[in-house]
Image (cartoon, rainbow, N blue to C red; front, side):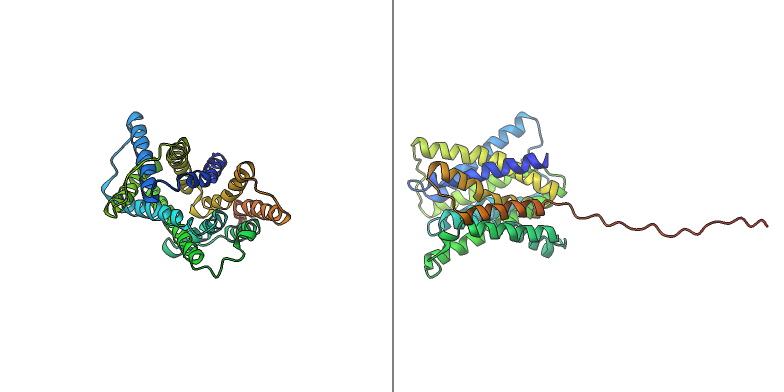
Length: 306
């Protein structure tokens, strides 16, 4: 089951990069984000009602829902949409793929959980592989102030994503399902984004082109309802650090799509990068070695009879 959830998340989120690209242009980014998560929240509400599941969260969950809505479904996407204005999509994916490290660090800081060596080494191998994949896009941009601002936004978006992971893990520990928490967090986050866009005077227009509408539906239902639910269930099952390693694989799926649709050409460093990513992925998913404890010596009972 964990493998299925993991692969489902990778395939769907790995293809949302091209869908987000299709949304840029006519409609302002905050408005597109609000549309996406309003639709996703409505679908989840209908699913909860149709399956007669609980719809109203308990009182103690609201502070976590508000924090998750702001971090995961508001700031996270605002940062990445605007970062994409200055940073090539490949480099945005490189920054986002640092999520496993942020999750491990945040778990250590806020939940006092040790950082597993396999996860840390696997993440570093994956990042090295992603660096090889996108090395040509990184060259010649470090003196560009727009590029640096975009990188800062992408990094901030990744930290927000990691924060949302930990909040979901906390709510699942309270017995709340990702279906319920995602419904309310998406509604909260999209309402904050939409309210901010309204205050800033951004028009709530719609691009009626099949390209935009198709991307919106794909991002709202598979990209949000299905993938976020699968991913956050995975967070609860295997932990935020190992679940977030799927983010390292997103660029590989995006590259495959780019090869088919945009003519991406593979190189020897790119193939080496793929090998590093896959090797790091296997290492991160290795179970900790069991520590075998020798049984204590039990004194032999001898008869007291002569």
